Picture 1 (cartoon, rainbow over the protein chains, first blue to last red):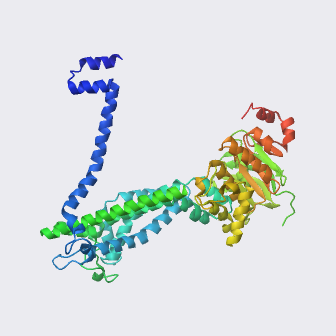
Picture 2: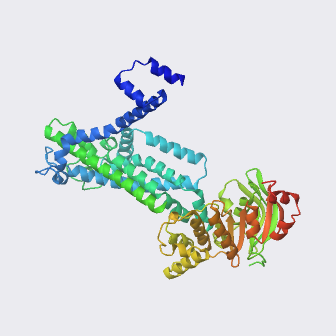
Picture 3: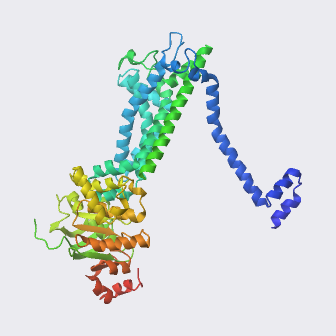
Length: 312
Length: 254
């Protein structure tokens, strides 16, 4: 190849390059190597933030979460904060769990039923496009706007007041588009012939949908659900105007007794506090939240793989 | 109940998808306890014909039809006719094996449970008898709880046949049941079809002429939506009356 010869002749070769050229005979192979390096660099840049975040958060918060002296470790999560924010973050941990559970109880059935309706019970057409378009737009709405909407609609207009109810309903608005779309995707990937096999046995549409289609789509749906749960768990903006804050767990369903703390809100509030020991608690809470989200992702991964292996 | 001579009788059946006419005024009946092969080149309407018989085409919004299909003397398209009962009585096996993502056992018990069989012993007996009829029992009896998708393609197809038999339909529709399988699995299924005809009326779509001749008692030849010829298979194989049939079975069209 004349091209190769020209490259080799014209390159002022020092030792390293000569070795490289010795191993990678032609210009094409060098190009190949170059792209391999480029791709590896991209991957490193992609993965690095995860480890950097983990390192940064852990470097301050590690002893809060894993330490064994008083107020650290499990005690950090199980004691309520005192009046000047000494103590633990039990209020935020319990609050987040309450918010996420209520949001899921409202959001998941609604979105799964909605996805079933659009995918299985409507023909492609205007209704379907409208629902898909709206849910895509809703998925793209910034969370602070959802929070503002939650305040204007739930807190103010429906007079729910701030608290656990308004907060979790606002969170469910955030999870509905994600769960709806991933469920739709999972339903779409179920082969038509499975539905036909069920119908050909004399099954009704509902029986087919419930026993065959949803079952076959289950791994996809559960993955989408858990990813959505992991996401809303860490949302701060929707809660700022809707959930309030609390040093203990909510005792009522409405009124100021229903105000509820959450991990992300607590992190945000603590980290802007000038006191060093409060900032340390913010990092501890952040590490705790990070671990919870990680665990949920791992569960999602495990379920989808186990169920996939068992069923498909 | 009307008088009826054959399970399925078709009278002047025409169908359309949108504006495109797929079947043109087809009239015929299927003799009970025989295998009828429906052959024809791709796109001639074989599958559409088959899927009209158990009203599976109703799922397609643009589907329209004219004419009458009678099951046991009753018009299956008449208002108030139960499509669920119809499909319980007319089983179907599809081109590609499509077992449900459940265990082998649950694949068989799915249909009977839909129609109200809940007794565990009865279900166990059904599982065994259906799998035996489909010549699959010996291969899976030790592990009925294994996921059906783990079976080989040929086993899956026999499971699908067992599943179709589970609701005890007198009529079995088969839509090119072996075209997605390897020759050995295909051979097993062909043998099975011949065995099953003593208890069932089988209507099988195929584009494989040799297979139609091996397996069937009657053969229908569909061409561009017309029923060109319908007679004893041996007669068609020896001396087709229509030149289009001859062209197809000698491989000049199709």
